[in-house]
Length: 491
Ligand SMILES: [Zn+2]
Image 1 (tube, rainbow, N blue to C red):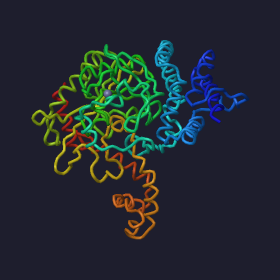
Image 2 (cartoon, helix red, strand yellow):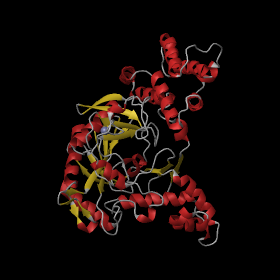
Image 3 (spheres, rainbow, N blue to C red):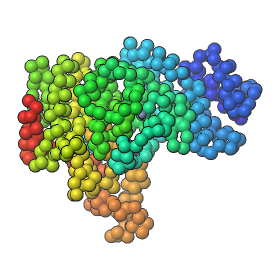
Image 4 (cartoon, rainbow, N blue to C red):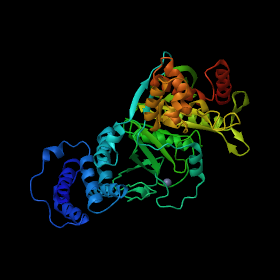
């Protein structure tokens, strides 16, 4: 009975979404009308059960069922309607903004927790789905740990789709998934429902940006910062200033920028944005391989002991750290070293880029600069410093900042394929191909299983191998000399 569901929804909103009890009658009448009813439910509902709801999924299911059975909606339309209901029950964006900044004044973490909890309780962030992701730590006898996630909620994209997005003329509304015009957008088959999304404005380098949580959530409190204008990603000095402005206001969080080129960037290049969250990235645990330089103002620049090529700038003078980051960026962008396959510029086409990640711990600013290059050749048409073809069965997508920092997000299909590989390994020869035809790309995994390795151990080594592919200066004497030659152009 939908009237009972509506009554439960109103109680839920009072308990979990900050609905003012003074607004309860108004909200109940409006929702009744929305579902074609006039008279509210009379009777008792189990308030304790509603109080104990960590997520609204049970109520969402009731809405979807009514919409399908009584209103004749298909599932996608019913889910959009449920999203609309929770958007209607949630505080207006201006109220979220007011409360968020009120909390931030006392404690940045309290403000972030408020927005995060709201995003879970109104169903925007689908916690139950994300909690089903497989997550494990990859440990190696030597070198940093990595974190591996099989993400069950995110679609797999390839580099060519992403490159197309960059050149696509956007005329749709909202122009992209990161435009502020998504706020409250009802959605359709082409564009996801955003009735329940809430984001808050933040000022970065004097510009208006917004912060929201990622609907996919690769890690704890995975947030996205995006510019108010739909403009393409572009890394410059201002990028580092914006990142530091963010961590100055929210020191509990890290914030990073993908590079601004396909293959070595993130999946959205046509809207300037950052990603951040609680500091869970493996790169933060990496040690220093060596100290490369110390400035007069006390900024130390280290080569980090990680799998891809990273420099860490650390100091208490934000300006000095930013100055050095800019110097490294400007030296790197046009840099050539053919002996290491690095060509920064081919005519007007740029191949060099950086991935940057900022933190602030105590009064110390840290900026990780990962040196990237997106050149392709006949041997590696998908990218010389990209996952090499022998790893494509595990990961083919571009290596964005989260993965470059050691947290791998692997496609959902692997959940099934890793189990199939275990079965296939027990069968003689390649007889498994008749039962599991898509195991044809998994010969190396099946061989590893037959030699006593576990599927996870194999995946761990693949992920480490991918980061070693991504390294522009390899962890070899020739690679170290290459990095030395580059650093001499900076210091
Ligand atoms: Zn946009």
